[in-house]
Image (cartoon, rainbow, N blue to C red; front, side):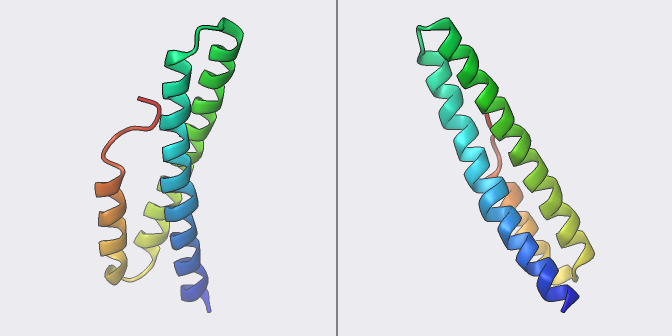
Length: 90
């Protein structure tokens, strides 16, 4: 039961934390760069930073869970690292 819960946490961290939050951070950061209104630009920067922190948390959680699980999960962690080759918000 513990292994299943950890595997579900790993998948959730990969999809929601690493992919969705990372993508959101990059998209919002691009909007911020193109925004001419200073107050809106700053709000977008703050949102991008928050999404970036969520991405980092999801990535950290995924690394932890895959380290706790058997070596068979190394492929999942490797694919996550390869997919996350760029830092969100840049």
